[in-house]
Image (cartoon, rainbow, N blue to C red; front, side, top):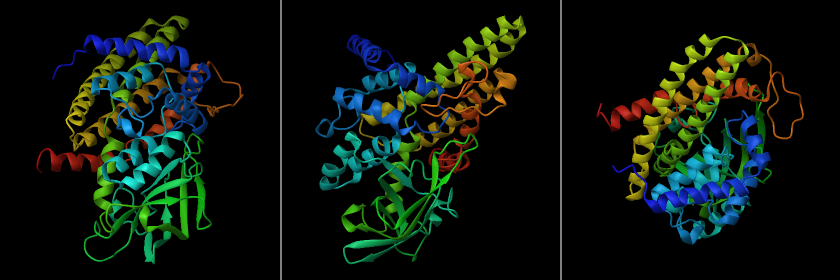
Length: 399
């Protein structure tokens, strides 16, 4: 695989850098740096989304007729990479990165024409309804039930660990429409309006006291038949397709981690000088180098996935590999960052957008503990790493 960029692509990279220098607000960068939440806070993400949409750069992987670009895979990679290096806020993935690509791949023309523009404009803000109190990694055992009544489904049940459900007006859900046959059968994929009396949302706070997750309770909630993706009973196939986009990619994520490692290296040098302790810098140098090497190897894997997408292929089992490797790396970096600040990692520090709470120590310390705590869940959500290893064993090794 040729990993060199063409002259045209290098010029494009400069265009992206110039755009970020001119259009990325410094307050969004600062808010992104101090945040410890799993997902970017809605108001930060939506402001950046609006800027990118105005430029026409919000959904570069989508077809041009739905707001995408004519960029090649290298340009998409360079754009995501430069955004990560500039500390641009991450965009909330449930709409742009999950239901959007799913609709493009499996939705009807009517569904695409209606929902995709609303995702870009921010009129619809999505959350994902997969996990249930008794169905997490064994997702096929889900029991949230949808009964067809005329031209509607009536839904009863509970979803849990639902990210940003308290902020969303739409939810895409896996529901059980039939109990016959294998548990993977009889599951249907629905897009549901959250703004109705039959849906209630209860908060689940993280260890870092962030409100990212929720429990969603359906009590005779309703959804029209035309808001089904795929055929009734084929939701498991639809969900597997979508999960490849949730787990896959990783190029921009690696760039962000490499940026964090560089920042951490600078911090350790600073602490070493301030405390007149050169051995501190020496002890961290090899650990940081090891993490950089691991990040670079993941970056090459991300480029291979981009190459597959360029040829019209699906990410496949590589998405499970990326999910496992990326979450392990995120956890290792956050753990080392927390160790580096010593006892400044003990107190709880408010990292929410707009908070004027005085920081304990230096500003760079604020998010370390919260980020470490929240990233403990990274190897669980999106399908636990143990489950991903099983998928890899079956699909790649034939075990």
